[in-house]
Length: 238
Image 1 (spheres, rainbow, N blue to C red):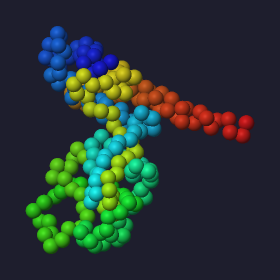
Image 2 (tube, one colour):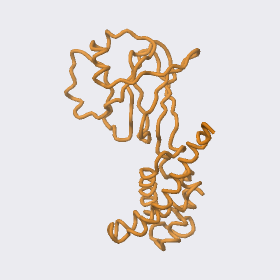
Image 3 (cartoon, one colour):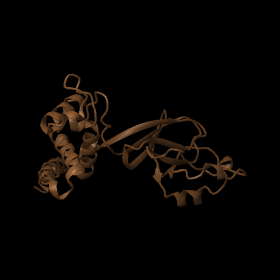
Image 4 (cartoon, rainbow, N blue to C red):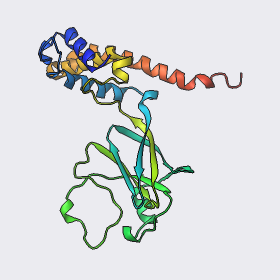
């Protein structure tokens, strides 16, 4: 199912026809807010779902030292640097450790093969008070709420494809999108949206049973993920 089909079923099941513009196009008039809220909730509740892990690539060129990317990335597990001949995993450091390794001004740091990375602190509180006498390595964005980022040291000496491996949220519900939840578990997505809608109007105690049934479904998904992850290890020593 795509978003339009899920939205249509959600409205039919709940009887909330006011959440679409009409029953011909079934265009959104508020339904997608609850569907997205439902998706956000179940993605937090599900444990180690294989489909939540993924990779993204960003190309950086000589002199670059940071990469920013979508906030749909929940956790960063590994960072790799790829060029024409090698693929090397970068060593993770804390911000303070990286500052201690490279304490000089950015202009004084020699470029080279990327060795380390740290999670960037992107939030920019006041851009007008930056020190104008010198620039240390940093990465910030005036609007950082939709992004995450990493700082890479030393600044690279050539073009590299930076590969980020981690845990990612499913794509946001918009347009005619299909994602893991709309295709594999549309009924759970709809039930989660129903919970979010009812929670808005009736409160947590009134929708307790709906949450219980939803959690039963989530538990079964978690069981499948655990069995898949451990299946090949069950016969060790047998």
